[in-house]
Image (tube, rainbow, N blue to C red):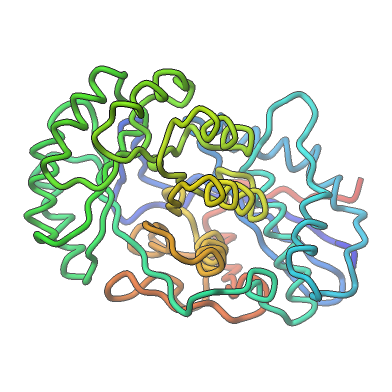
Length: 383
Ligand SMILES: [Mg+2]
């Protein structure tokens, strides 16, 4: 199989409501979709969300990485005819073509969009689901809610809405002030038995983070995600040694090298995986496997504003990994004004969502929506 046509869509999809955390406020998604055709009627799509405060990427660096590096790497590719004796082998094979660009800047979102588009096209050309590569170990995936950084009253309203949707888990965005009131409000909104974690998005230093964790532990908070800035590895190690709550790493965990360092330094309890952040399915899976081997717990997150494409990839990988403590994503039109999929891919009551069984990622893309929200469409020609 060879790709005969490729288009890169740079998208700006408005949100139904804005979403805020300590590093950014968003009112629309900034995402990119790569569309590939194989010349025999199969069309595949992949998505990546560049976030400067997570991986240093922007839409512009993503565009350059795909145009100059990843597209030339796959344009002339002969993909394996025989799929799928061994799903892992196919993932490894596709991934092996997507080496990092020279120069040390790794472009995980660009790589993720390319990997997903190749897999979606390949699997559709064989009429197979991504589930044939990532065998599910459970029949449903249960998502948690996410509460934007707001004052206590607004956080209470968000929590109450989640409760009405049957959700019993949520992660609350916090900043350096007001977090105790915020957690009390969310607890009132979600109910006494709810599981509540917090995400600081790196807003604290070692001293203030310890104080915050000591204040939140008696309030029944289950974990604290990314208390310190991404690069503060040694402060994180110190904090972890004294912390009264489990620490999840998110922005600090992008590459397998990050994962190895975090394990070696005993700096955390939980890995928060995200497919776009970690550079695609296989790299995310490898980080998950290292985490499990090292006795860490796993959370599965998303980038704010993911469309049905990354939601679907996340659903497959979460079902394949199984036993994840906390899963986010598949918010669909709860967050986006319009999603890219024909039909609904967002979760239902209680955060529950079924597996997607259609070919490829299992998403029928609405090309009209893709075109409507494209701020730029780049035709990629074979090099
Ligand atoms: Mg986070």
